[in-house]
Image (cartoon, rainbow, N blue to C red):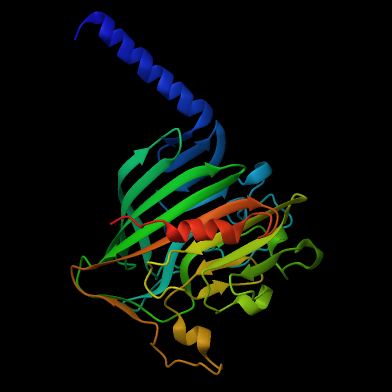
Length: 325
């Protein structure tokens, strides 16, 4: 390689890096967490070291407002309700994995341990995080493994986070049990909740079938949108269930106090005492030894309610997209 060509290649790489820093998605490892910036501004951090499970916090939405509850990571938000300390940011967990509770963060319960990153790629249009994790008991016995791919991209003034998780029955058969305690989740700011803390709560819930607020809990739907004000700015979070997911359209563990979860497993819990009640264990999902199962979700962080956020329209585009093989 001649000197001139080498200089041109270095200059080109430098220009590309500068362009990404100014306009794209930049992922930086800060020893224990990944920083994700969009157009030079912090979007989120992925905490993976010395935690009960990896999670994203904070998540900065349109208008620069925080779209996850601050507590228990921060103590300085007087509006926060201090309940369910295991509801941290945005995460994936489940309350019954081969009978082990990997949802609640108690010392005697299971947890998800980050093993390694398979990829962390910055880009002008999107950033990608791929990792491998082990689901373990309190004494360190591995229950199963997962590989997750997270893609982050801007969408006008909105933000998109795609979360794909593949469970691997690496240690023998694994069963994700029938319980409402799970699974793909985000805990929203208290001001976005429907009922928590009186006048502070000014949010609403709506799903793709038209069910609102409390009536959306335990129902099946293609998508759910949870919207309300944060620091006086109207914002919302929609979660999309990909049509290729097992048990689509999924059930939703979406609470009026700010917990927002997709849960395809808790069929008995969601139908108990209804006309369509299913027996205990109806939601068990067994993955045979050596096999895999994949779930794909999209988080849309938008302004306003589901109409101004074009949630239904954007879901149709997402649903029409082919999932990766």
